[in-house]
Length: 317
View 1 (spheres, helix red, strand yellow):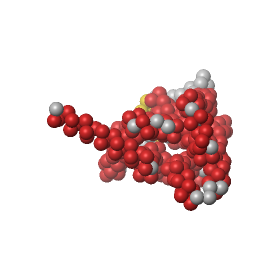
View 2 (view 1 turned 60 degrees about the vertical axis):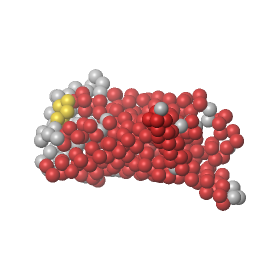
View 3 (view 1 turned 135 degrees about the vertical axis):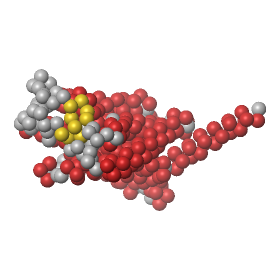
View 4 (view 1 turned 90 degrees about the vertical axis):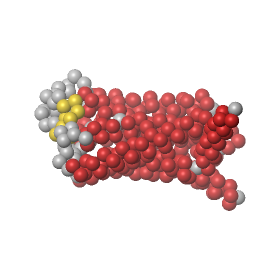
């Protein structure tokens, strides 16, 4: 955290659920099940978007990136949490805790910008369908995806390293993971600059993409209302339904977590929000896209049918 960040803390002790054996057992089963569904669901979407030529479109290119982000984000939290639940005195080194915070913050912020890019993609598809493939060319899609990652580095990773923070011995972390807000409560130095950094970063990574998404959907709604055909309106709305659902869940929990007054938040409430925001949401995203999207369902049938036919052919040869 910079040259000013001298610390006497070598490790952190997680005390979130250390004295509640039954709760730890239940959470271990729940986290493991959620992690398994997250890996399978997002992995399936990545597999379908790669294997099925019908899904080689800008929309599914960005969905592929989103699924990869969700897998990485869950993997930065859940495995460590499962380890914490399995021991009575869970600990983590200062360096590993710092890395976990940084990775989680980076991936979560990248998802904000990626969802904004996906909103722009939907706007172009509905407002200018005849030139959609020209505007959203393969090169532009790659540039937009890379921009999401690069902008996040500049807005979250760089400020994170220069925030002045000093830990003076208190190392009991009332959480099950190195969540930024929980760790910052252990800082013994003046946190006013940290709060300014965090609010500015949260405003840029949450508000800026969120308002861009709102603007895009306002334009989308205006375009849809100009469509005279009821079927045309329904089809246009259906192309945005899954993305809009994901945006609502993701931004709703993220804004409640990071923009609420910290003086009015309880640690138990923060734990619950972290579970939903960082663990449940990555599991829900592929379910939302597969359950609400006919193209993904059709691709699944084509891929499984192709595999089944190949297996039958190999069997009877």
